[in-house]
Image (tube, rainbow, N blue to C red; front, side, top):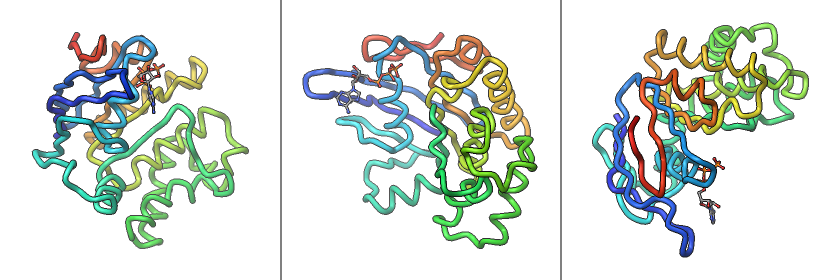
Length: 218
Ligand SMILES: Nc1ncnc2c1ncn2[C@@H]1O[C@H](COP(=O)(O)OP(=O)(O)OP(=O)(O)O)[C@@H](O)[C@H]1O
């Protein structure tokens, strides 16, 4: 589904990625671990097309995304890729339901169909009773589960998560991790997750370790 070929990235004289090669298959849950500053977020952003590599290529289903122009790339990303960040990035002035719907409206889908699906997804997150609440009226765990529903609204082929449980207590972190595996079971959802959480890293099908600008499989 996703392939990185000899991906390189430097910031000035700092060589962060020195030639990354990896493949992610459909419905895999892959964790990316490594010490702070190892380049995990940089790699995730490049895989998720949020950033460009200096050299090398990222292929989705065999097709390179590097040749896409800015607008085509934004459209591709909105339709095919979901993101979950450490801080949920929900829009404070909108309700949970509206936050979940927004990426679908941007993709041009009809309001009625989108709202039905958004409610279903909030239900899967055990949040049907919170649909009309704003982020400030929800707990951190609830907010993060809303951001999972938002990541799912356009049925992306792959979801990239950067430290998704980094801001949660143990109970909420475990609940979130269970949701990832439940979504894989029910929707065949593929996840690539950068994490410092050892439990999550070990639960994944595969653990990719970043060190000195390279990846090692464990
Ligand atoms: N925009 C940037 N400009 C300059 N240097 C950067 C930039 N982004 C990241 N870096 C540097 O690149 C290196 C890798 O950063 P990155 O955020 O990818 O690491 P990480 O493994 O995700 O770290 P952490 O676990 O602390 O989040 C770090 O030394 C960081 O300071």
